[in-house]
Image (cartoon, rainbow, N blue to C red; front, side, top):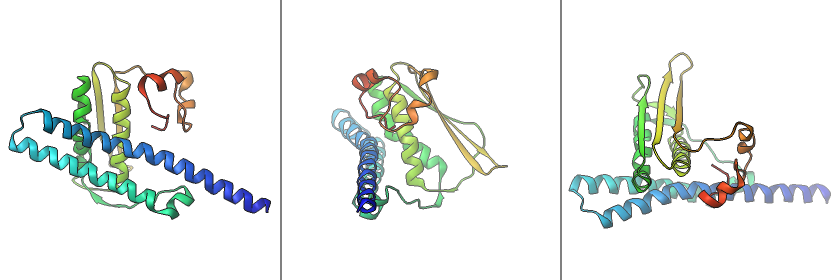
Length: 205
């Protein structure tokens, strides 16, 4: 009975952690969709701009649907894990998708997003495009959230020797105190509790 109770408690904890993380995954594409809908309603757009905005809304809608499908997959919830689907994809397309998704938020805060390609990159790479896009989206969204002036720089490089892609997100925001660096990698933990009240969020970024 004790063993069964422990297994049940661990399954319940896994479900809670999984769903909390998924709520964070939902927020980024939803913010992009609402931001682009606002821009389409409030501005005079050319046909080309309208098409570009609709493509961004569609791409983030697909990402949101993928997250919802993950939530509805009970086997993933019970294990507390997500599957990884490796395939061929375009790195530049993923990065440009992030830039497009963040456009509305950047304009709202009068910030810039600069993409620096530090090395030549292959036309296609092998990775889980949805997961990589989600990770970079969340990093850039957090950088924007904690930046009030200046902007965010996205640096992309490829090591041919290691066959790895490096993506670095830099911002001109408040930064993180050295003594808080270890603590922020714990779930539901922020560097400063007051930042939760000022900026929102659960410390899952």
